Amino acid sequence: QKEVEQNSGPLSVPEGAIASLNCTYSDRGSQSFFWYRQYSGKSPELIMSIYSNGDKEDGRFTAQLNKASQYVSLLIRDSQPSDSATYLCAVNRDDKIIFGKGTRLHILP
Amino acid sequence: EAGVVQSPRYKIIEKKQPVAFWCNPISGHNTLYWYRQNLGQGPELLIRYENEEAVDDSQLPKDRFSAERLKGVDSTLKIQPAELGDSAVYLCASSLDLRRYEQYFGPGTRLTVT
Image 1 (cartoon, one colour):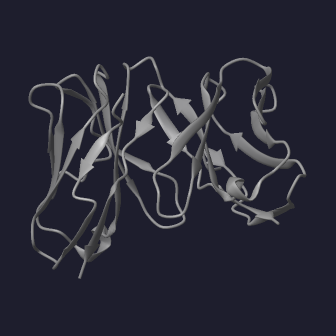
Image 2 (image 1 turned 90 degrees about the vertical axis):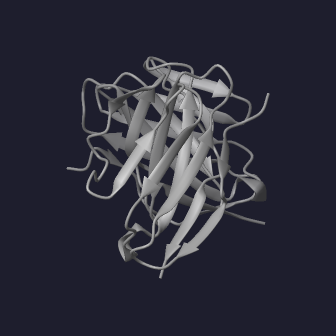
Image 3 (image 1 turned 45 degrees about the horizontal axis):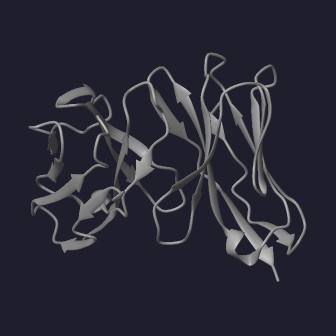
């Protein structure tokens, strides 16, 4: 089992709809969870962090964490073409951060 | 506030040649990371520094890779000699300290080994 798993996509979502990105992780001891956005040819950009079970909202983004199910998700409301990118899930293991391979998101105009 | 600075942005070298990458982290960030990212993959940690100390270099291929952060600020990652499989994007990131996992990435160096 991979440490951090994401569906590689592409995930196609119509403009204005909700995009839902999912991630599972293997280490039950993980306490810190992050979502990074990476545009093609660019470096990852931190967009959300979450540390406790439940939802965390920041503008159009909502991160959801369920430690019992070892599952973290990112919801993007009112999706815009500028949201088209690869979204990387990252989880701490011991003192390091492990990244998933990312999900490519394509917002259809 | 200036972000993480990396140079060069692009580098093309022939195999067996040496190459070096430079990184200057965000001011005040004690922890510095070097990652390698292959196409379609997430970043993979090569080495992690807390100030000038390398606290995790378990993933660094030490036969050909070396890194230093002599004054606990900027850092250099070197490959000698380069191999075809080293072609990738080399990313530098920084965070406030080891317990703050929010990392901020530089623009990266795209290395092509021919």
